[in-house]
Image (cartoon, rainbow, N blue to C red):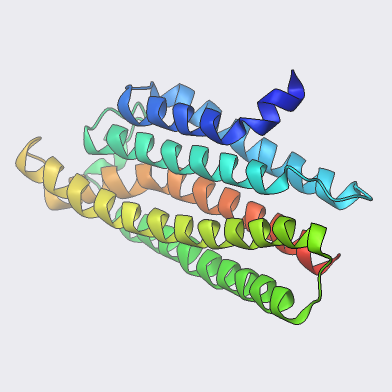
Amino acid sequence: MLKKIVQNILPIAIVMAMVLLFIPIPEMLVNILYLLSWALSMLLFNTVRNSNEKIQALPRYLLFLTLINLSLQISYTSIILNYKSKINLEKISGKGYFFIIAIIISITLLVLSNIFIRKRVKEICKAEKERERKPEDQIYYSNLEGSSLFLKGNLNAITYIYIVVLVGGSLTGIFVHKLSIIEALNLVSITAVIPTTLSTMITACLTYTAAYTVLED
């Protein structure tokens, strides 16, 4: 049973991703799924680090968690753009320039994650070019390299989604909900910190897992 699940983990991830994309999910459930995804990412890294043998299904696990992570990011984006967040920001939405701090935090996370992930992916690609692999290992490590490139693309998607959330959410607040610019920016930017932080942390953890497997072999 477990073997069948592992073999079909990517189709399962695609189905779950479609569900997350097209079916409205409560914010609390999205947060729980985010934390579960983060916990699974950490568990995967610890398993890889403590294992004496290659985990053959590792590339599939990486792609599975990446797809789920991206889907959760999009689900949270829908919540923010539709102003359905349950976070109570009424006390600060119209007071002060809290959005500046929120934007700085998000941009800092995105920049640092970008530097970290690009460096790890570069190391993986370089290691694969320089090392001579056994024929039976070539497919495994090629899949790992592909997974790392997919993770790099996922971070780019997270960055673009953040920009869409910030701009689109602010415009929606101003023109639809009749908020001031400050109110809209505060509500959107502060709420967006949560998915941006969790998504970048998960992506960085998965990338490091792939890099650790390749470089420590």
